[in-house]
Length: 371
Image 1 (cartoon, rainbow, N blue to C red):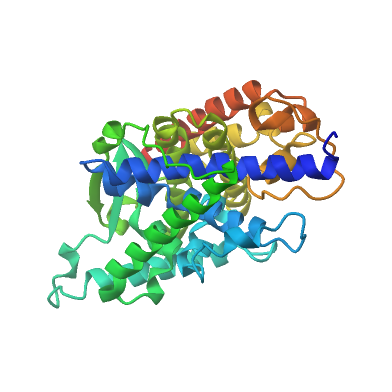
Image 2 (cartoon, helix red, strand yellow; image 1 turned 90 degrees about the vertical axis):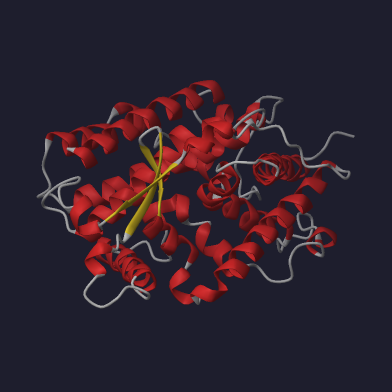
């Protein structure tokens, strides 16, 4: 008997979750078995993507639709979700990380400012009075000169202002354990017990470098003189996510092509949206480097990502349960023909678009910061 449309949708959704879990499981296992700097840097920098998969996977397995839900699997998940998973999963959404569509730029500025001040409090706790000017208050990580992470956005991502510093080791240990446990449970969707593979070479990520700076000095001239330091920190957040997608994830793809593509697509999608919000809210900002970013955000290639069907492809890259009356001609192609069914693109053409546009945007943001 041929499977019904609903059965096909459920089967494809489970396979998408399995692909994502196998990718992140490979990343985490490869990091755990690696003897080098990448052992800690890779899980940290990919925590947003890993958290998204963990969170959305639980949502899928606990679906109110009894045909979708798998309560037997849920029993093996952590009893309660780690508080940072719900927060960190929004990291790749950047300025689309909001509970209200009407959230203003100033509200995001307040969020990043609070994270900055919270981090400063921790850093200056042991600094003698009068010597705080010697203590940098921004750490950022670079790979071949490109910013792939920064401490203030990471402080915001994990909600560390609500965590006592002495609890950090246990906090992050539990966070990592729950991520790995979730991925392991999701791999059971293969129909058997799958040993998480270790196929990735992390040696290139050992080249990630630490940089300590003073926010006021480092970002004073960065991006645009008309922007506040909080606005520049938001741009640094966006830039680091773009570079994680453009520079880091390609090094961590291996055989997990479709899963890594979805992560890169999501980062680019939300980077373009976030940059549009920033540029539209700050019309006084003007420089050749800023104009280049604006040109990319409003380019023909960027508009290809808003063509009919693209939002549904984006949603299928985030949420596993396929609802509604979406017509998909499932096939044995990457993402099971979802891209071809919903858009004028092929998986290969969309993959190339995401790669090229992400690379172009990465260069433009770096030039703007360093201008």
